[in-house]
Image 1 (spheres, rainbow, N blue to C red):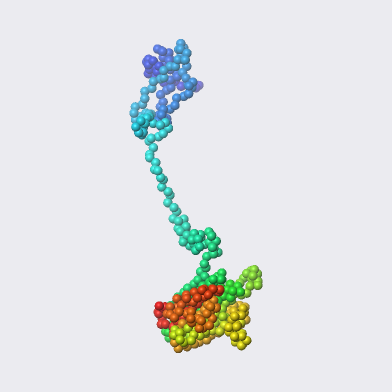
Image 2: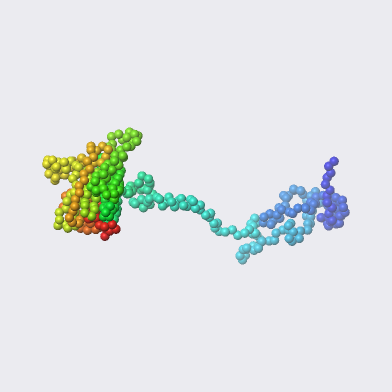
Length: 446
């Protein structure tokens, strides 16, 4: 059978301090009910964070039962408990230090801890991931900034994402100096893109003498992908010449083979997938014209198909200049047949209709080559009709070519392109300038 727990004996009455005997349930002196006195706790009391004592129970909760004979409403004195010694876990916390200025109360603010460590005003940020930083830097480095607003990024289509301005294309203006020869190509002022291209190089013949190579091509605007055609032709022709000349091939034969190689390169562009032809069934095959020059120590060779031209301009301007090519064009045919004078033919709106070109739909490939042995030094100008439209006759071209063009070919080409732009720039302009005779290897422009 269960038993009630026995109350622990108290040494004295909590009310009147009268000594008690073991087993007393009431004080023999004052009659205090000893059963309402809580036993001494074995565990440590729980304290609030600010060290305040545990709040007392609300009135009426656990109130002592009045003793018989006690006055109604009289409250017995609270029991007396000895506080634990200092340092004991149950001892109350010491009062916090005074933290206010003069006139500040010494008592702490309830609910505030003063034993917390000081917190920093700023917390350190976590270091960024180096991989993310490197990726962001790579994107910023590879991104192009708009040339108009200087703020927006240029998208893959060549337009600014901020202001929508079309950006200059890489081929809009090109300049290249290769040893003692140079070339410049510009989009002009009216065309939306540059459809011209050029190829330059210099090499050594089997006997150790130098050889200079320049190829200039003009894309046919009425054909499909004229810019691709001119680039493919100029690259194929210049590479063929630079490969054949060191092997001992005669420059005129090498020029003929180079034009054939350029023709094959342009023809290959017409081999598009069937789906591409379905979307544009009425477009012409890619096409372009070509003119090139090879200059050695004593020989000048030119080759061409179409209406791009080559001019000879002697350093001694008292000697006559010369045009070295004949156009494959309607105007040239009229003049050759004696039906019109040259001035009349080239004034006609059909003058620039070409009768020869490189492309899969060309009637027949007829490469033209010619060789010359000038008896004096000078400069060779190889150009598209974007230039010679503004300096058609040889004498007009000689007036525009700087006198030091043979020793400063890049400057000479820049001046010639500028002349075409000043004249209106109605077409793409490409010019290459070569000195004659070819200077020894290692000698560049001054």
